[in-house]
Length: 81
Image 1 (tube, rainbow, N blue to C red):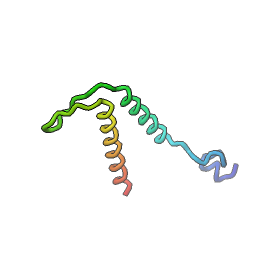
Image 2: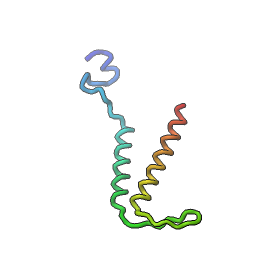
Image 3: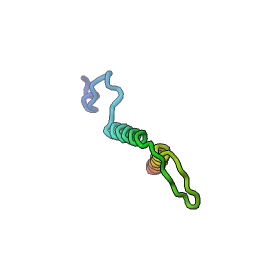
Image 4: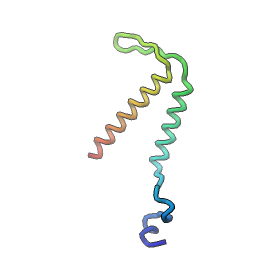
C-alpha cells in the first residue's frame, strides 16, 4: 500500500466508493419513513384553514415527509453557498 493510500485510510482500488456515516444514517431514516408511511393505511381528516379534507394517511405522511426533505435540502444548500 502506498503512502497516499495509507494516509487517506483507503484499502486500494477496490474501495473507490467510501460509505460515510451520514449516508448510512440517511438511508436508515428514509427506510424507516417509507416503512412508517406504508403501514399507516387508515383515512385521516385534515383541517386546512377553511375546508376539511379526507385523505389516506399514507398520502398525508408521504407528502409531509417529502416537504420536510425538500426544506432540509433547500436549507442545507443555502448554508453551503
